[in-house]
Amino acid sequence: MKALFNKYYKKYDYWYDNNKFAYFSEIEALRKAIPPGRGLEIGVGTGRFAASLEIAIGVDPSLNMLKIARRRGVNVCLGFGEGLPFFDNTFDYAAIIITLCFVDNPLKVLQEAGRVLKKDGRVILGIIDKDSFLGRFYRKKKSLFYKQARFFGVEELKDLLKVAGFNTFSYYQTLFELPGKMKSVEKPCQGFGKGGFVVISSLLG
Image (cartoon, rainbow, N blue to C red; front, side, top):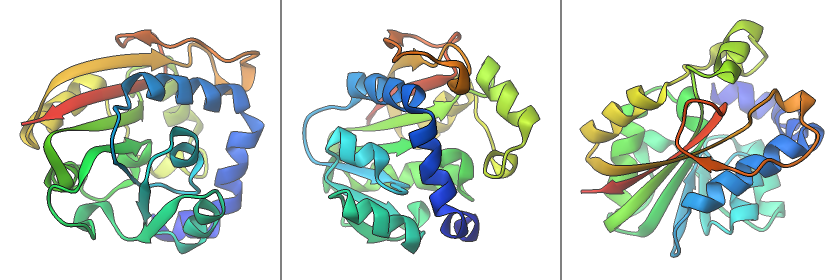
């Protein structure tokens, strides 16, 4: 998966330019959940989310993506989510946006997120809900990136988060139509089940 993103990093980044309403809608939903404090984005990619959300540090295995993220003003580090190159109890929150469906060991990534979080830290997940219309669309479409993804449903991820040591969940959702058909930025709403993009916030401990 690292090789795929490292090779097609420009194609990945261009998607956000070509689907601005979807991207900004996702940003608005994430803003509802991102707490104050020092943050880490696991799977920072080209830095689209970290730069907009003012997340302090990003980590990613793709050197080509990190070069773009650095140009966007993000402090970046080369590494994998399954073995984060940070000390214990370092961050107030960790954001994992889209990334979890592409990693080799999702549970290990969540456990590593918990390790580097301070007491009462939060993990913020941004996912394409497998059970939504958008999740079904991407699974059927099998695009360059998503054909290799393992999509998660919200309840499935909630169970995984509990195993990793997280609890106290809250949800926001957006993308109520296909990204290519959106004509404006959508206002996020609480819960899940209607929007294709869901933000899950969960407390450590």
